[in-house]
Amino acid sequence: GGMAKRGKSAEAATSTAPPPSPSPAIKRKAKPRLEIEGYPVEGISIGGHETCVIFPTLSLAFDIGRCPQRAVAQDFLFISHAHLDHIGGLPMYVATRGLYRLRPPTIFVPKYLRELVERLFDVHRAMDQSELNHTLVPLDIGEEYELRRDLKVRAFKTYHTIPSQGYVIYSVKQKLKQDYLGLPGSEIKRLKLSGVEITNTVTTPEVAFTGDTMSDFILDPDNADVLKAKILVMESTFLDDSVSTEHAREYGHIHLFEFMFHDISRLRITLRSLKTEPFY
Ligand SMILES: [Zn+2]
Image (cartoon, rainbow, N blue to C red):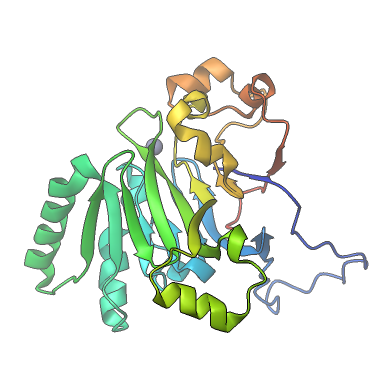
């Protein structure tokens, strides 16, 4: 997995020399914080092993991997596809939220997975004799769902070896129409009460998550908002010339080299070495 972003860099840099490294026994759990466009980002993405990308301030996780501890606190979960490194921790996610008496989570899955996921939970309920409370939302490509009054999600098509989809999270804001800017509050209130539509709804793509995909999603005209999002979380399992672009495509993945052929000059790319450690 990998991560790309556009816009102003929000990552902090330290100018002081690093302190001498303590011995492993007393080494504190370092938490290098990744923050992009004002959103803290946590999680893990190791191709074939585990992918779970968390936006704690939105209380959501994209894919669940093996259910890392930090995913448990998130109210919303979005599953991109059913490869086990992306969905394997699903029953544990629901069970652990139950254990901590957290609100039953809302889980979004590609529409075709609905029945299989329901059966998966039925099997676990039968074995575990627990409730495993949650709300399952099957979402088809192009469909939208209101998460909160100021937040919605839309599923978009991705291109992998099995059916897959990504998600765009939009902020939804009511903004006062140009004509009414500068009016006193009492006047605005009067207009509103008289039934005049004084606001426009402004939706902004904030965060997009692809899951595993070939680069074809970039060229899909229905996916324009994906590339407009402030943050694009995009897998790039293959980063260097140890593996060819053809090989990456054969396995349904992106090779970073492919981006040289796309007009994405506005896209600035943040690469984190995820092969060895999660970006908690
Ligand atoms: Zn996959």
